[in-house]
Structures are given as C-alpha cells and as structure tokens.
Amino acid sequence: MMHASLLALLLAASSAEAQTGPAVPIPAADADAAAQREARYLRQQVAVDNARQELEAQRAEMKLKDELLILARERNAELYKVASEILARHAKQRSWEPFIQSSRVRMENLIQSYDDRLRVARFTEATLPPSVEERMKRELTPKAADNAKAASPVAPQPK
Image (cartoon, rainbow, N blue to C red):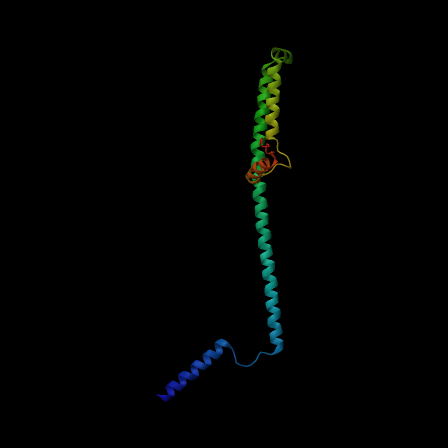
C-alpha cells in the first residue's frame, strides 16, 4: 500500500513539473529570445489594430460616398424632369413671341421657379451626404437659437 501512494506521489510531482516546466532557471539567451518574440508579437498586434482602424475609416468613407451617389442619382432625375418639363412647354409653342407677350410676369415667375428647382437639385463637389447634413442641422439648430437669444438686446426697463 505504501508503494502505491509513493508511486502516486511521484507521478503527481512529475506531471506538475511537466505542466509548469522544470524548476531550473532559464538561461539569459532564452529570456532574450522570449522578450524579442513578445516584442514582435506586440508590434504585430499594433499593426493589426491599425489595419482594423483604417478598414473602419474606409468603410465609413465608402458609406458616405454611397450616400452621395444615391443623392446624385436622385438630383439627376429631378434635373432631367425639370428639363423635360421646359422642353415640353416650349415644344407646343411654335414661336417664343406669343408665349412671352401673353404674360410676362407669369413667365418670369416660371423661370424663377425652374431656376430654384435646378439650384436645389444641383450636385457639386461641396454637396454633403444627407446623413452629414442632417447631423449638422441637428447640431447647429440649438446653437442658433442660443446665439439668437444671446444676441438680442434686453430692452431697458423704465424707472
């Protein structure tokens, strides 16, 4: 019986040593190599983190560009609609003179209306994606109200 417990104790000690490693101190060269591997691992981890951040930034940029593309298509359709309307109106008329003479004010209002619609639908490099534009409006609206309150002078009270 004593043999069995001694044998079990020896087996337990050898398995513990195998799991934790030998109790012998690690030579300095092995410690340096381990430190170099750890430093390399940390550099690789930083590189992976940077790549992830860059990927997320590119995804956000692509999302904004997709919004702009959708907006450009919508505005292009509106511009085409306005231009088609103008052509349809003038195609019915054989000459410009009767159209202009019949009601100049109505014509000027119509021209201004077309001009306004074309300006609203215009897509330029400075056009913001709708999500950015909405966020700016939300952020600026309370500030504008606060600025208006601060800018308005308080009327002096009569004594």
